[in-house]
Image (cartoon, rainbow, N blue to C red; front, side, top):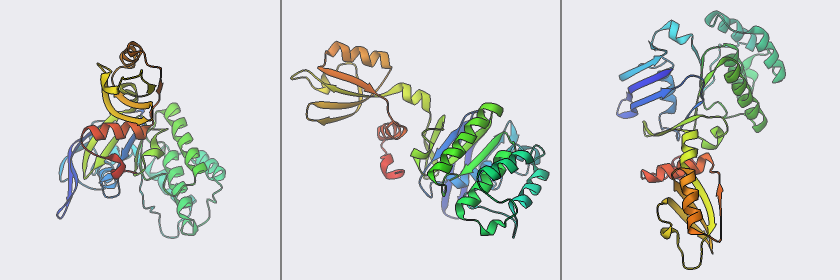
Length: 299
């Protein structure tokens, strides 16, 4: 488990991270969402022990991370800016990481390099941005660490490659309980892979929720009510948002689904159905309640 308590970092007069408290459970995918400049990279660098917090603590499995070799062997950090040794090849990087990470799987490295169509003896500085990202991801997966820190990992990858990487993450989570922490400015990128999502805004966690719990507690209903009846007449229904197109109403509501359906049936509408919400719709609803427009923050 990774835990941050009152994590704070300031650069001159810029408060990059403002007393952030977060708990990341083992075996889950934690998505960290935020616009450019929200503090995502700074947060990951402190969790990875690259930066020392000005205040607060970061622990991995109960161990402090900063300048702790044992703790750092438990994770692999894939930064947004790819860093490799000068004139190095993927083979050179593999040889280096085998020293740092004792469980590094050379056979799997060779297999993934081949599957991704990458030459392991070609100099990395001749690779495209997307190819460099792929090399970093392959090294991270093959290091066989418990945690994988990913800063804008899908940025620069084509759609097919993004799905391939997500499939690898899912497979390793199932087989060896890998815990990926993925920072991204794009909420839609994480919808099909994350278990828990935190929204970082101006250095602080604006919202942190388990997706299953969120999906069970917020619902979208399309309905046509009886003549003369309005959404406000649906007594007991906690309405978050109401939209109308002629007689068709689209309601975003909070609460237990069985209770919501009981209220709808009792109202005897002409028609109603419950529709699953996307992650985007859930976050829009949640952040509007606390006074933020996530569409301006993320999309």
